Length: 278
Ligand SMILES: C[S@@+](CC[C@H](N)C(=O)[O-])C[C@H]1O[C@@H](n2cnc3c(N)ncnc32)[C@H](O)[C@@H]1O
Image (cartoon, rainbow, N blue to C red; front, side):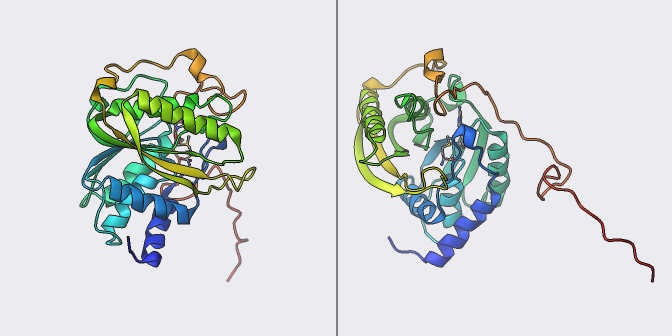
């Protein structure tokens, strides 16, 4: 893998500039830029010429992969990208940026909450999925398996899935969640095709050293595929975003501002110059 690092970082910088501020209460914690370059190039390579669904993507890895190709930094990338996310700000900014990429990739984005069954139009239609879910420190990894199941339901028989979750050998909860995620993926007919341990860092004030891995799953047993998509049970919503932080919000809605293309006018006021004579 060789590419021009400066051009790559400048391309990712365009995507970063387009993202809404992260909401910590929903585990939106953005990946650091150098690691986004690594992950986006990897995604572009794994899903070259394929249709891929991202179940949640605040980081903007999907757009980064597409933009690297559109900017000529790399020569490969997905044929189409679909985002399913419960945050309307992310869906809107994704569509807005995707408009600029439409000559090289088909981009779609829909509001969707993993607590709900996967809509029929997304069931079993994609070549691959990518998730970076809430990492499940306080719910035994249930938030990870919820996203994993939706990604699996959205993909065809022969498909690949990338799962990005916490990985620190000194933090036992990360290792239990990783093991249980792999076990659930195996029940769903996947094997672990590649594992890149402790790969990415995040803008996470209270734990700046916590890394995530990138685990690539390949489905080898179609007999284990789920044939329906059910709502998440109430017990699976508990501690979804951390201790005492259940999944209760259906959608994060965007507030319309009159300052289109500028910082929200709710965040600042303007104080005028005194009017001078002459
Ligand atoms: C949970 S965050 C994980 C951290 C990741 N680095 C990020 O900030 O994007 C990943 C994405 O999942 C989305 N998300 C969170 N809860 C969701 C839910 N219940 N249904 C669908 N998407 C959700 C967030 O909006 C975000 O885009």
